[in-house]
Image 1: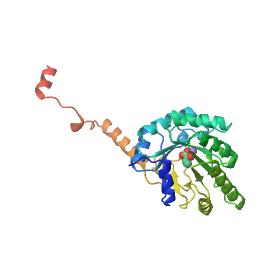
Image 2: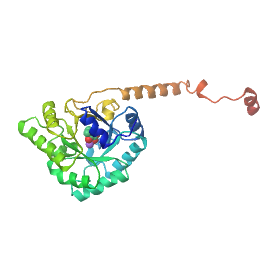
Image 3: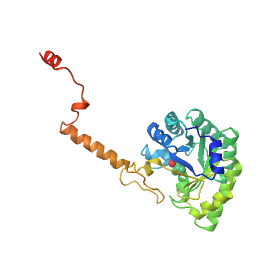
Length: 279
Ligand code: KIV
Ligand code: NA
């Protein structure tokens, strides 16, 4: 498969062919995503929860994001890699955001960065874009701002808030973003925003009318312990956690019964050699 570039994404968008995106946070998760033919891989700061066991995304550091991006980049042959700027690495000033973005690209080996925020982030998006780094914006439900939003809740349900989302989308487009993630907004709002824009919208909990979709890999694979809260929009395409649990329990039982490793799982030795060795 050929390497996906901004030109590839543009051509998918022009053909009205949905753009596929999934998160990855390490070598194996990136490998399988790339192998499956995802157009884009997102090293999302959701890795704070799904890979590092943190309470939310606010704890994860730029250094940690860089390390995860590097491991993803080592496994990725064709997908376009986008890395999340974590909370605290871009809000202070456009200069801070440009420095953090350069580190994610140079040290993390990402092709583009994603940041949360709409109209208020427009000058920052413009500055990063001027530095030659493509920016994917992220509006609607922005998890890094969960405390300001009053928790994880659907955005844009009233006419006023839907209009604010449209204004944010137009602002990030104007600022130079190559696309925009729409998270947790009513499908009709996402449809309308998508029609009004000249850049792709990547939906998560925003309905099938977006130009593309993104999901957190760990969630869609069912690769998490029972009890993890899943938003309503997550479809579980697999049950990887149960598979892993079953395999490890079977291994445990076989070790306890000394039924593993036997036969094909052992290295043989000639009988004469064994006898001589034991003498
Ligand atoms: O961090 C993440 O995984 C994300 C996606 C949910 C869009 O930002
Ligand atoms: Na994120």
